[in-house]
Length: 447
Image 1 (cartoon, rainbow, N blue to C red):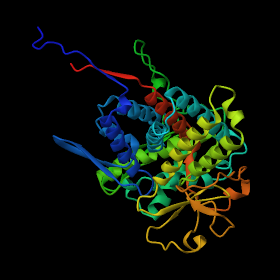
Image 2 (cartoon, rainbow, N blue to C red; image 1 turned 135 degrees about the horizontal axis):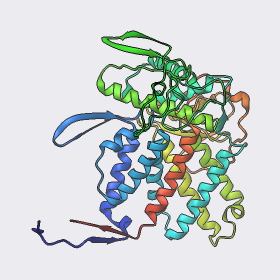
Image 3 (cartoon, rainbow, N blue to C red; image 1 turned 30 degrees about the vertical axis):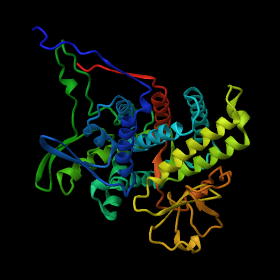
Image 4 (cartoon, one colour; image 1 turned 135 degrees about the vertical axis):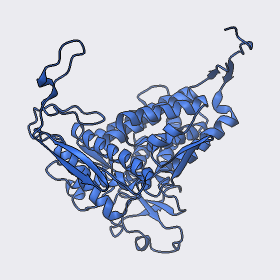
């Protein structure tokens, strides 16, 4: 068929980040993901202009999948976040917000793009080295002889998803069920086959691979130990009971289909987070405390040991200080995104943790009278701590490192994050921000 219209030339735009339109769209996306962040995050309803189903969510996986993005720079950002979520399930909003903050802050520093990207890489290396080190003050090793930390991790994931519409008792009940289901899928014999990915894959009821060209042997179908019927609510199920003990079924229900979809996605995320702890048996402190602690650590290191960070790569200490402030501010702004009701945000000068004060609290008052526990729940305000406003000017300090083992056992209701997912999210956010900052031209095919 012949072309009815002449082919239009591609549109080439230089320095896309200088465009006010691009800045505005980035700001809108940042506002959307920031408003969804944390247990008090606001829900979003997404539907197309032609009607159809409505998605109500605050999760990045569902949000970005339902959000049509055509602007090239936003497409880079959302695709990077979606790729991260497809591999690790969690910390998608963390990644998106941090990336937006970094792009915004670096543009205001006034350094050349090459210098900013080079220093961003140095600061990322400083973060990852610290988070992986034994002296890290915001990482807790998991003792698989106790379920306390694992239960806290699952509970933290459930409470951060308000669209699940769960009360506290339901969160406790479902957290326990998820942890039990996970533990039942872990073989007692370490030699049994386990593949970590979106789910744990185990030998299922003695089945064998079935060839597409060869005849099928009866043994390929496997066997079951027994069967029975089961009724849940108004639905009946045919339950096959396997010979293997490493197979577990988890049935979920909720108040409506929207909450049910959100709960299914959340449970998949929680199970995946538990699976990732087998490979890397650590958790990070949640509730904004890892971000504020990490920001305090970076500020101190870049001020006290700049030579060890620069390593003679041609950047000056002044440039390092400017980028360090932009990087740390991005982390602190990310932590501040957890507060959605206008409350004040503080940090202590001993541990560098996140503390939140209600919006209607009196200002001239002793801080311990208004504060109970830090964001992660590890420390109490009754300790001898010095507080300062998170977004205010304050002298850099070295937060306490080497988290004591007994500290994690002192609280039964910690807010925790998946170590592997958050570390990957940090890397993806910085690398994606560097990619966006390095864009010189965008070529769009308008046909």
